Length: 92
Picture 1 (cartoon, rainbow, N blue to C red):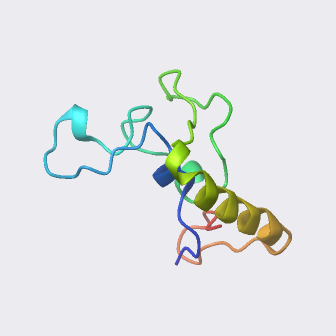
Picture 2: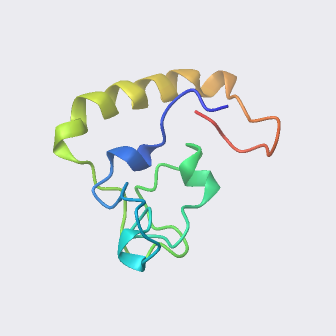
C-alpha cells in the first residue's frame, strides 16, 4: 500500500481521463506506461528517463502547495524507506 500519492498527479503531463483507450487519453504523455520507479516515488522524473519522449515532470502551478507538502514528507521518510511487500517498489 502506498502512503503518499505519486508525483504524477501533480504533473502537467499526467492525464487522469480514463474514459477511452486511445493514446490521447493514456495516463501520461511522456510514457505509454508510467514506470513503477516513478509511479511509486523512487524517481521524481526531473531528469531524463528511458522512454520519456523528452518530457520531464512539470508541476501544475495550482498544485504547488500540495506537491511541496508531499515532497517534504517523502524526503523526511527516505531514511526509513518503505517498500511494498509484493514487488519491492518504493512507495513513498
